[in-house]
Length: 432
Image (cartoon, rainbow, N blue to C red):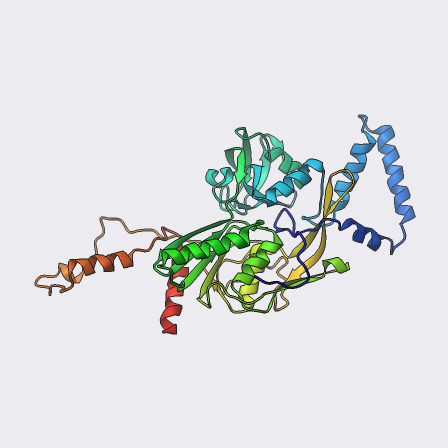
């Protein structure tokens, strides 16, 4: 796909990992900082407190630890997404964007001093253990989370694969805290999954936006077409539920795959480097076939960019629940010690100029959080064939079997997916 606008740097969008990864941004930040003079009185106060701690604190603290904690405090005081990354944390962040890292498999943020679960990642230990989006983690093993930085909490949650950690969780609707033991593992995130729902109707699940997500999406669409006798798809369900984000490049690529032209997303901030826009090139991979995008409260950042772009261009129907609302942009600025800071530098906007920060994407069709349940086998409704002297169906046995196969709906008890498939079929009926 062709991208019109500024050349794509290495960009990262995510509810926790941040939004924009830009190597070499330090110079720009330094140029910006020279425009204002240093607050000497405030620096004098800082130096005075530093000296008092060194002289009077109950235990000896190294200058390195004090200064590093001061940096962490500066960033933590700004917003929930700005943070300090030491050398190890920066390495882990880069590993995470490649789709393989160690830990529990959850995306987290901070809320009221506690760790909030943005979403568990598909098929990970946290997902299998029953951790849910919106959970508040109040203890890690027996350590209270209150007072920890997000980085400190993440360090504790990550550990040797095979080792256990006990999470104490507060969940809305539960009368008392839940205690969930999770076994750590090497997390290998499969970005894109696909399957045929019914002949001609495809399903693509994007769990996170990684380096190869755009390419994997094209491979998935090609595979779905092959399974449909090499015919164009009649419709597609794009599942972005509980997708916390990832690489901005990937979000742009996915959006571009379904658009022929127009703006996908743009960013605005104080420094020139933070002002970018991305436009779609020609070639809609689905040739205009209808799309339903599924979102929920765990859909954040890159997911919201895709949903917002397709919604503004009226290319897809957005279905589900209000998304997370992560619309700020972070730049990763490396330092000379191998670490970095993740600093909020801009906001991003959908093509129509909407900021989803703290608001989220509002679905075109809102669905309640329910699931499908099959009636008990004991309950049998009366049908025409049960009536005395009913007329015999003249269809052959082969035709009957064929009709029964068409009536099968491989959506399990997934209510939103069931509704998305029905909507796609309805759109195609009206198009005929």
